[in-house]
Length: 184
Image 1 (tube, rainbow, N blue to C red):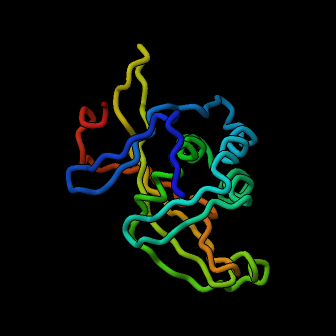
Image 2: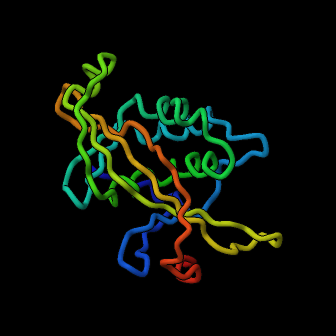
Image 3: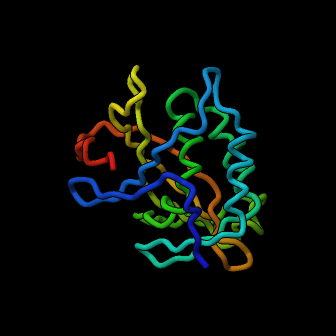
């Protein structure tokens, strides 16, 4: 059963060339000295037990109990600073839509002994995109920053695919959309 929490201010639009962008309209994780990753981890626990279908491949993806800890405390997360740290934290709000709109699947075999069970059948990497608002001094949305991410899924011993982490966050510099099309 797929479910999306209706209390989230999330939408999916297409850019000018037809690619999906998940619009995350609220910045709920912020901080002048960095993100409180314990809060992000607690937020992600709401998704545990959910499943979503990637539209491009019809692969069903589960959200396992390991996601909140891995997402919030992975080696990749620990090196993030500034805009990319804020982007990853706030991307947590759009997990369902990011999974559903994921594209460009790549498979890699598992080579690490420590992942013998949790990724016995290897790893899948997909790409996804999301946008976060940038507010002006008056509190109004001036524009949106668009980010490209790699979504990592593990193919476990039980035969299911689980979202493992979101990595390689890159702010896009292209102007493939008009920001006025993002405000709804």
